[in-house]
Length: 536
Image 1 (spheres, rainbow, N blue to C red):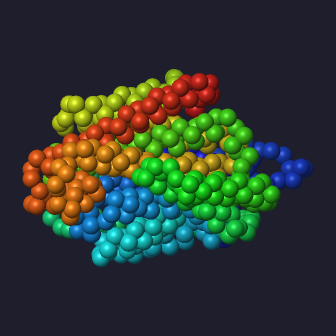
Image 2 (image 1 turned 60 degrees about the horizontal axis):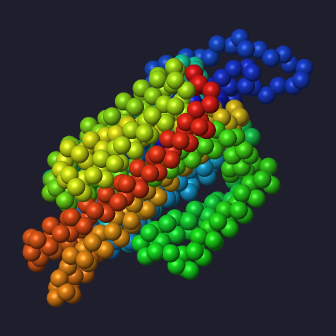
Image 3 (image 1 turned 90 degrees about the vertical axis):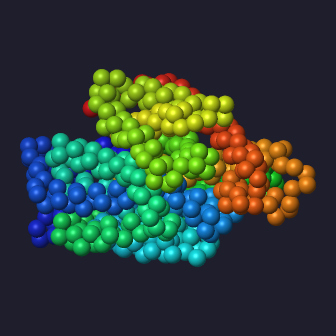
């Protein structure tokens, strides 16, 4: 999500030729001397205006991360999705982004990064309209998947175009800092925007926020953004794209299914299929001249460890986003706009961490800074876990703020460690990997902790439900908390309170599991990444 360092990209000059940041980056023969005296051209008003254009889809993607969590109870009441459908409504977007980021980054090199950005923006707007007016849960799932495909084109395009426009190192660092801040700002205002819209309109209005943003990008991009195509473009391998999806999706299905119904021979078979396709994918990448993913990058210890921290760190965050928003609305009974206002300050703490962590890493090794932030996150998860015994707003928001503090830190420094650990010529592939694992981590977190909370909820509510309870109401009560609250007029207040208590128990179990995971990541950061060189 955050990128503070990236390798050099080329920028089109007048006449359509390609020039690089320095003469050293330009291909040369053995007889040519190496020169480093060229001063990179500093960005002017057009480039900064282009950055403002790129900030719009960046903020939109951040907005989409948190906005739907707030709209979920309202759309669930309208569309009445099953628990599995509700999880897929949340997950389809992230899974498609995670599966296609590397592919879309490579595609942008071939057809043009600005062109891909504009195609993706248009597709994002159309899919948002489809999602807003979805008449059923299945259509909404399909719309969310389409949004994920479109989102996968936007993220690598914005990063690559910033590198093209800002050739001066100092300006480029500032530009990436603004980019990262805009993503965090989008996450921060998502609950506020969503709450205000849900207060006045129906849940579909949350998706229509994208339409005016897309319109501005499509009108301004041709005038303010340069076009770029790689001077040497290899063939995009469709087989690798298919194999990557065939590896990711079965593994995700296994996580969802086993968390919901427990281990079974069928779910284990699906997992084995995903792992098998993953091995085939890895073997194919080793044999390709222009691979979709350079597997050799994983031979670097710091690269692999930092990716693991980003992946598993975001798993807990994805679960916390889902559960805390439901707790505020369905358990505490806050109106959407009020819940959004309360969730704003913790998200702003994430922005502060994203800016402050790189400054702190100038004096303390990044691995230790990340370890300290993850320790704070572990404390935050424990505070959320204790809500089962000390219910209320203060404890859950305090824990949520600490979780976001860790998120901002590991997103900023983890990306920096990944990119700097890779060879300069592989920096683009490395940055795409950071985006992929973070999106996948968020999506897996929603699936894993959402399913775990549901399993505990059902166990608890069945233990509390009278034996003579009507069958139709029993189905609603055991399905989920939002189904129980939707059927409130037909149920006693005591039973609805029992459902809220059961949900809180499930959330506490999930938060405790996330705390254990964060504690393990503290050790990984301190022992493996603590020895990584300072990123200055």
